[in-house]
Image 1 (tube, rainbow, N blue to C red):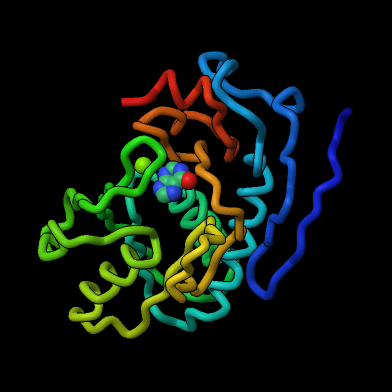
Image 2 (spheres, rainbow, N blue to C red):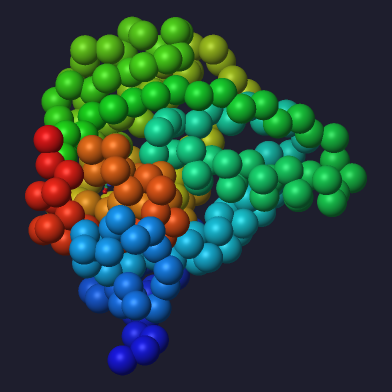
Length: 218
Ligand code: HPA
Ligand code: MG
């Protein structure tokens, strides 16, 4: 017991987590109200933040002297977005560059329990209302639809950063420009990711157990 050896491969731009049994929950602190509800820690909070710093560095190398408008996809993306923006701001402050950073938000919802549903809801982002009611399933398609909508504003450059990429059996070919970790096709919670609105207040990215699924099922 103790620290488990982590079997990871660095793939080009992301860290691939494969056949990784996770960390024991005993090694970390987490909210008491989730003590019975989790299986293991997949990615500890500190590693998420460190990896995000590296993504920020890559983004700032690619951005040139362009100002940045960050479009944060709520709610699950708020922690990653906040940490990424903080790292970007630090890099700008410590450079000779004059780059402004603005942040906007859009909210998408397509999950019921741990299943992706057909009807994706878009809340907020008036200009994106055209998307409402379309059948968009899975992050790849959601992102493609969102990008089509943004394209009409003819931004100079669009880059997509995602903390996680899931290895699904039907990859639809979409890859973000920057990603933190490639994970197996597991339902994960924490670091703003929810299961029916629960677990967003968990710092680490974890896998829930059957007890947790049952307890918060709707
Ligand atoms: N967890 C929480 N929300 C999600 C996930 C997940 O694994 N995949 C898509 N939305
Ligand atoms: Mg959700």
